[in-house]
Amino acid sequence: MQNERRLKKDLFGEVALRPGESPPVIVRNAGKAHWWVRPLARYLLRREAAALAALDGLDGVPQLIDIKTDILLRSYLDGAPMQAAKPREVAWFNAAARLLRQMHCAGVVHNDLAKEPNLLVLNDNRPAIIDFQLAAHSNRRGRLFRVAAYEDIRHLLKHKRTYCAGSLTQREKDILANPSPVSRVWMATVKPVYLFVTRRMLGWADREGAGDRGAQP
Image (cartoon, rainbow, N blue to C red; front, side, top):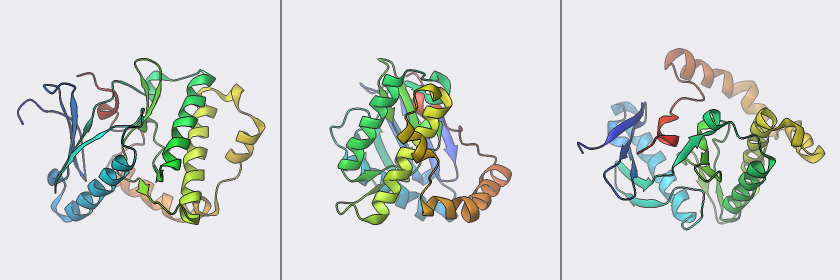
């Protein structure tokens, strides 16, 4: 659509804002992905839709509007990404932790909270979590789910250590000091390759894409 404003383009497609809608709508378009990763981009689109559907009605996450083969529409959340807002109040992190627990109780793990742009400070100072491309939904909440949920919590605590370190409890410090075995394996084996491909070959950064997190309509 002509009134769409592109906010982000990467290997897996484009994210755009439709400011003419009331309220504004965020559009993720997997059809704009490179042809050789388009099947994966569509798969990630379906993952995001499943996660958002499971979180329907939860404040602080986008609401799913529609899903087609290449297009996902979700609600726009008006705020600023974490790296811009720099939240330093313990109350904000407590609220973010409550939101994360609500997500986990609904059977959804985010799997990408290491990236600061995936956490928003809304205009009323509430926390929000966005970008559910890598999220997983499970009604069983088995061992792998619990490991992923633990890592969600640990990544949120890493951000708390960055912006509000003086408020960390001893229990939170213990969690930070004890990554899951899966995380240890990832850090030792997969992450160096991931960083080489995304940063050296593709020129990405962990804070890239903040435009679709806090852009004003």
